[in-house]
Figure 1 (tube, helix red, strand yellow):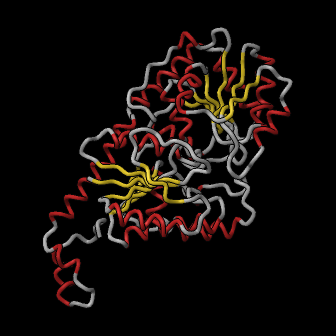
Figure 2 (tube, rainbow, N blue to C red):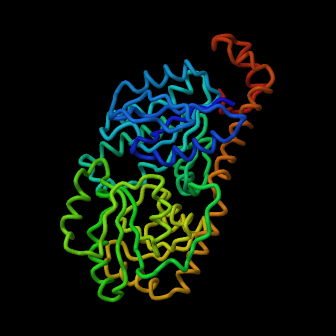
Figure 3 (tube, rainbow, N blue to C red):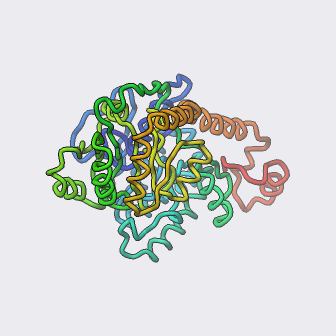
Length: 416
């Protein structure tokens, strides 16, 4: 099977580049697959990762992306085009992002099977916290974009609630729920004896400045420091693309506090050391845009999680049996209470860490990718074996075509 993966891809640092890399790594390990990554062009000349066939054929915020991507697909002739998408994958400007989201429909119309892994829904995004100036226009555009995305052959979402929304509100067909998964094939058991020796590190990880902000965390850490002096705060990651300079501004405001450290962007090879040395992961969000990749990274390393009490994360915790302590949204004192209670109880740390590591073992990346491939393979064989498939190629005005097709084909096929 020949697959094209459309995704941001390292060394690019744009949204979902890490997830795209781990999808590609698993696909690349299968000798029965041929993989080409249709990736975003880089701002500067950098070497590509070894052993990957990468075609950089689209630009962030470009209106011509459909032309270039369709041209690449026409040349490659894949069996499946797999899109790894956020609504902002193709641009931070509304028009460019919307134009890019027409691609799954255009690829399907060109005759190629199209699948989307959609990491969030516009219906669930808090536009106020995201800093959107014209929320009504964005809601309307998001509705139309969602309708277009549902015209792909099939779509996967990472929370059951998102599947219900797409099926009930949008009457979507062939919508699947698939877990986000951890980004590892063989996670190493956590070394609990290294935690808190000699200090307990509270880790916050993400792209900061929109609904992921640091002011509340800084306020909570001041209280934590008074109640638990051995605590240290590590803030990892950089600015969200829409909030340039945000992290630098926060770092400047706490420059005199030696117990707060900013790491900046964390390269792939440094992630393991960062997470393994932490005692707890904190998610100080004001809203959510889907299943949390950060929470799944914490599970991979057996970290307890402290998180704002957001409905999406509550559902994720229940569905995947994650160990998460929830604090009141926007309440620094509640956050501090949760973290201090956890730091003061080694037994609770171990119990939550083991529960999250167990959850990680149930959703390794090879397991997740096998679910996708089984679906692709089933549809591929279904299409190849379907009787009278030649009538699908006849013009629509031929009367015999529609009669035979209705009599012999399923009511709906994702390969048409």
